[in-house]
Length: 357
Image (cartoon, rainbow, N blue to C red; front, side):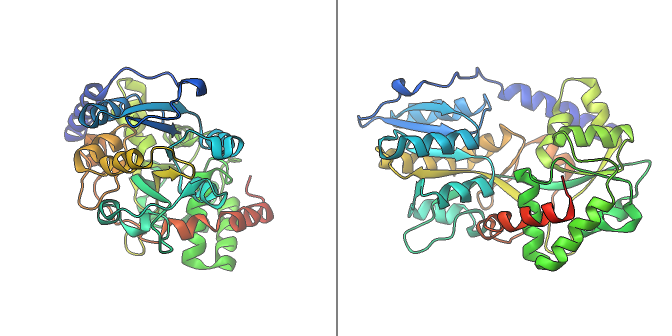
């Protein structure tokens, strides 16, 4: 317990050290349409720490970065409405399924980059159809299971499939099944089990729920800590945020729950990404490529991932986040995210049939 408290304290100090001044989103008229030393970025990431990365890129290359911030859906709508007149050069989104959706809508263009191909594993980028990938993962997060240490033993939730096991009846909590984080996991299960078994599994998860799905991932962790739920799904960074918090109540919540990285004896724990793509009508293509390759360098990878308590996506780069280090290493799922994300529509139909709200 003492060692864990020490790690939590160090984590809080590390996050404090990363703090920088936040940015206000630039309005469309302020975005440059021409000129050699500019890059227009549409980003669904809203972490102040990212600004230090952008400033360093500008200092190194002389290329100014102009930013539009919105959520993934807002970015997609903006790109659609702007069409060929869009000033966007690089697009950042925070979920593989959303990247695939935008790609299918024709909002990206392929990028052939030896640097990115060497650094970013094939399962964390779009399928290369001969001209390069249309998007590349830049950070990852694990879809973990948290459990109440008093009510549940970790062996009860060693796998995702165990969430449908009768031993966990009345214990399971999740956010909406239709949320992209869950859709991506459930599509992964579809790849693992096949459609019929996945739908049966989802029906079993619904039967085991302690309450109807509601709230976000942090709410699930707090509900497990309070005893309202026995087990819950969450992205790893939500727990890391609580561990890194300066608020004693958040730290107390984190200490009341146990953590399982599911399927360590099988295909590994499902992971999702924050990623970047080259916009279809990029006016500053060379600058965009330089920027995306820069974000794949080891120092940038660590800093980029730490902005949201995530893991670096680049091969061989390790997280330097004390909270994540406290959670330990784990076996990661290697199913290509592009193939997983392409199944979310069918999975949504399964959710409707089994009554997963």
